[in-house]
Every structure is written in C-alpha cells, then in structure tokens.
Length: 336
Image: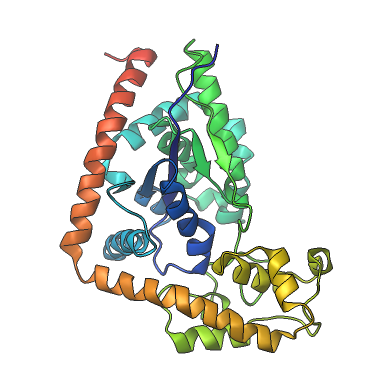
C-alpha cells in the first residue's frame, strides 16, 4: 500500500548571472503561480554552478542577483522557502549517498553531460558528470512530490525517480521516498533564441540580440524585438501552419505567455498581420512586464543585507526540514 505524501514542490535556478526572458517565462513566472496552490521550496543552486569554474566574486554577486530575481518576479519568502543550496549541507551529504545508489550506466546516458562537456569530456569536472545525482538529492532531501521541469530537464527528473525507487528497494523501505512527478507548463516550456528559433535562449550565446535580459531598458527591448528573426509570411490562423516556422512560432509563443493568453487566441487575434505590426505589440507587452521586474531587481540589489537576511531565514527553514529527513536516511543506510 503506497503512502500518501504531502504535496511539496522543489525547483532550483543556477546563479549564472544575467537573468533573461527564458528564466522568467520558463521558470519564475510559473513559480509564482505554484506558490498560490502548493508548499514550495525554491533554491539558488550554487553547488551546481561550480561544476564549471566560477570567479568567486562573480558567483557571490550572481547568487544575490538570482535571489533578487526571485523576489522581483513575485515570489513571497513568507509563503515559499527561498535559500541558496550551499548553505544547507544536507544537499551534499545526500548527493554522496546517491552517488553510491546511482549507477555509472545511468550517468553515461545523460545527454546534457555530453552537450556541456563537448568533445573534450576527459577535461570536464567530475562534478559535471555526477551533478544529476546532486539534482536528485536536492529534490528528495525535502521529499518533494512535484518538480517544475522544462524539456531539457525531463531526463534528470527520470533519474531522480529511478534513484528514489532504487533506494526504497535497496533498503527495503518501499514508501520512504516519493516518486516525484514532473510539472510541465502547458503554455511554454522553452523560450528560444531571438536569432535562431531552434536554439534555446541562453546567456552564453554571444549576441546580446539573441535574448531579452530582465535588466533591459525599453529602448533595448524595442531594438531586440525589431531585429528578432522572423520570415516573410503573414501570421497564420492555425498553429499547425507554424510547423516549419520556428522563429515565428517562438515570437508568437512568447507573446501568448507574456499576455497570459494561448497560442490559439493569439493566432486568432493576429491572423493575417505581418510581423512588423505584431512586433510592436510584442515589444509593448514585454516592456510592461519586464521593465518593472528589472527595476525591482536593481532596487533589491542595492540592499545586500536584506537579500542576505532572506537567504538566511530560508536556509534555517530548509535546514529544519532537511535535517529531519537526512537523520532518517542515515538511520536507514546504517550510519551511527
């Protein structure tokens, strides 16, 4: 008989700096909606960030900027637990236990390692190779039942589910860990580059015109949308007509998400218009949402002590939950 677990959402964002529209629409906007319905734990995953070398001062700045981004987008630190991963040692402790539960064959199937390590995988850090086990520890340390995921993280959640199942089986505790379920956004799961509709929007792309940063000014947003790649065809009536038009689909999907609409409604509203007119509407919608968030991030970043206070309070709350669970895990494993 399977145990009923309390519904808990866990998600993390890497503090890599320069938060952009993809972070907002792909994650943070959804986080705000989830906190209205469920118990939520949101983490700045700084341990994941150091799988590739980070300049210490830059990492420190980015942790605070990501925290400011959480708050500016509407997360409520009284409703949700907001903290940075490295401040709760249970993440690293459970990751080691999971390193010993997880299998090398499982790691070898992780496509993100292959993509990030590239052709020089012998020179990649061991942390980059095993970080899916740390991700599983992040989720299961709090016995999270639901995880918001984009398309690129589905494989890692599958691994977390496999690890939970194997731990429960290995230690004959069938109902100890829940098998976490994915929460996949219906409206948007990936925001693509403004320069190439087949590539994910990313801060690592060389051209700043490939993305809308949360700190962009009105003029910068207008310029970037004006230059965003499209095609010469008008906006169609049906979504299936966008099948081989990735850039057009991306802009229309962004507009739908930023205006809390659906792609179908957007196509009905914009059908037959050319993209020059549509881009004006898209710019206005982005400016009205993104610019106030950017201003809030700037204001919050000026008050470092306030951000540190929120992280400390969140860490204390996270530690209370994690220590209780970790003590039980250690007992199950046989540690004294």
